[in-house]
Image (cartoon, rainbow, N blue to C red; front, side):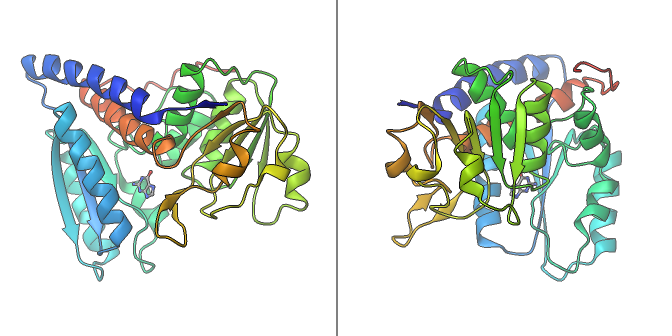
Length: 288
Ligand code: GUN
């Protein structure tokens, strides 16, 4: 079994970006990401802090707008409009989840697609689905970079994705399809899931259920990418996969923590730098 080291690749990427940012600054461009946090969700605060530390490392300026849990949709929309027209801001990130009274899709629609460093705007989602250039969501992009780094070619392989979220499940399915994998997406309504997971050459799990995937559900030699970030009964961070049970049956496996998580942040930094460089989203078709 080979352990897929997300920290190592994320550090390599951030190091390259650090050099790129210092060159941009010499040319008068100061990349800036503004994060909007609504409410006081504990996990969100932690994630936002991790993003802030990465920005500091890479040299990206970080703006932070914190709104109370009772902030209205109108207030949030006004904040986004202001950031859209602020030329010093290259990336806008709205930390999710938003409080329940706010319609997240209405909000995401307001962001200028060129500043949408999460790749959640419908324009970027559409571009991804038809293989055009646009902003790619960070976690799926990070997974593809890990597969590439470890020379795992997905062409023609059975890739099984567990979870159909807009943040991971759907975009990673599109990226795999782009690389000509045979993609199966399972979700909460899927029947006899282990019958499907047993066929997987590459298994990507993003559900938020600790211990969902056990050794009896996988075939020998499978590549396992665990996107889950949960807490176990000892309050330790763990993924969706029973790592100890599966590790000796898999050919490659990501640990949690230290697998996909650091790559999400590295890809966010990359999207910010691209936005600052003004790499235009011409929407050119690049993939079949
Ligand atoms: N909350 C959980 N994951 C994400 C993410 O990738 N982006 C944002 N903005 N919020 C999140």
